[in-house]
Length: 225
Image 1 (cartoon, rainbow, N blue to C red):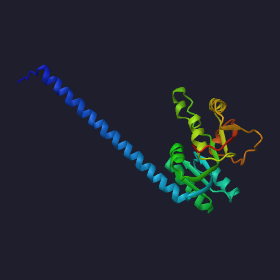
Image 2: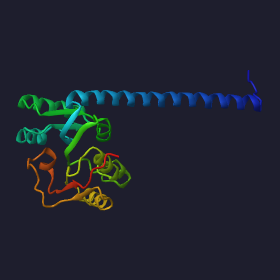
Image 3: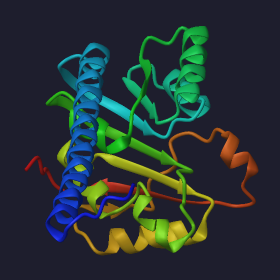
Image 4: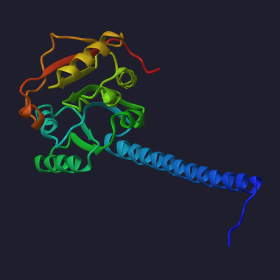
């Protein structure tokens, strides 16, 4: 038996289906926002427990398995060092290296750069930042995913005193050229080619690279706004 629906019935049915889809999408988005908020709260708690309420730290973004930062922390026992990465397995491996070395001035956390900068306790100041061989995202449509960009320098500047240093190294010529352009278009950070690289320790990515380029930036002024 067939049922012929009139125009009003068809329109009402379409509206109900559209409303149902809208409610489902809204619910999923609300859940996403809740998950992000929960993740940030957990990160904030971890950072407070790890770093305390105040002090200067050296931060490596994209620490990988921790090879470079473990050696850097050992060579600089007076500095509080933190390494972050977005891959859990890398962070766990780095923590095992730190535990074997027995380094009390070094910690590793799972976290994305922008969220870590946003959730750092207010009294924590970045004295040094290291961004070594981060993903160059070579395809143009993916350039927006590069860690090194204008917003990154602004966010970093809010957590640093004047004189803080940002160390950047990459084996991708296009990414390095991009970084140079980003630096040239702002005034907060300036390249200082007279500063020597603080520690030469061949990382996994550096060992694979045929060549690489480096720059050290110095923050020019205090800006916590």
